[in-house]
Image (cartoon, rainbow, N blue to C red; front, side, top):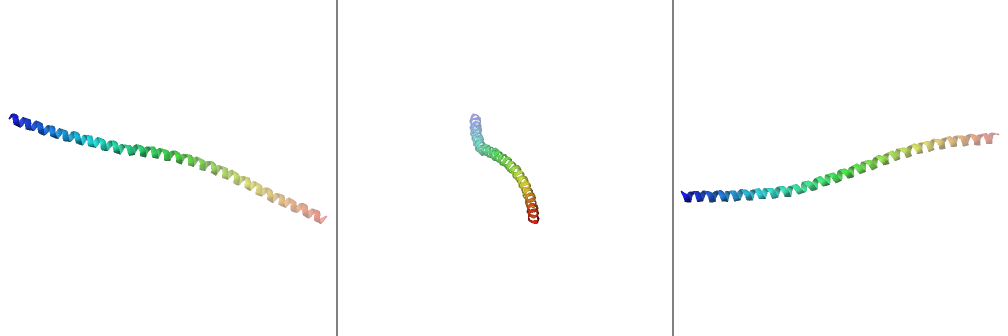
Length: 96
């Protein structure tokens, strides 16, 4: 009976060691897989920040482009008006 209990104890000890070893292996695997996740989160945050900055720059450039288009339209209208006035002045000078 004593030998049987010793044998059971040794069996349980061996089983406990195997389970502890498996737990250690799984913890290591979990920590290794967690590291890329942190790196991935960092990369996503960095890319998101870059995207926001580029969107803001694009909005600024679009606003500036639209303002320049309006200025160009005003200048074109002024050119047409000046050409018309010059033609009228030239015609009046020639006809007099």
